[in-house]
Figure 1 (cartoon, rainbow, N blue to C red):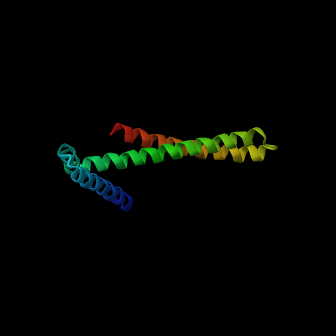
Figure 2: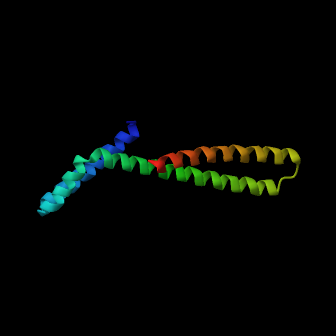
Length: 112
């Protein structure tokens, strides 16, 4: 588990312990049992939380690349010479490759 994954796990457990203490303070025994069941299955819940965070991050990066590509296409439309167009096309190609790698990672995460 990486450092950030450990942070996510610690936060998840802390949040559930806070919920448990609140359920205890209001006397809700049924809720306490549900929280205890979630704590016993914490590894699975934490893994889901980490996977969700990874997918969100990948989608944000994918969207960021798309925005950069749109900017480059706009520059390409206004390019004055062939050398500038060539450089912009090379940038687009690099972003396309990055986007393919991210899409591959997303596909792998959704297959889990």
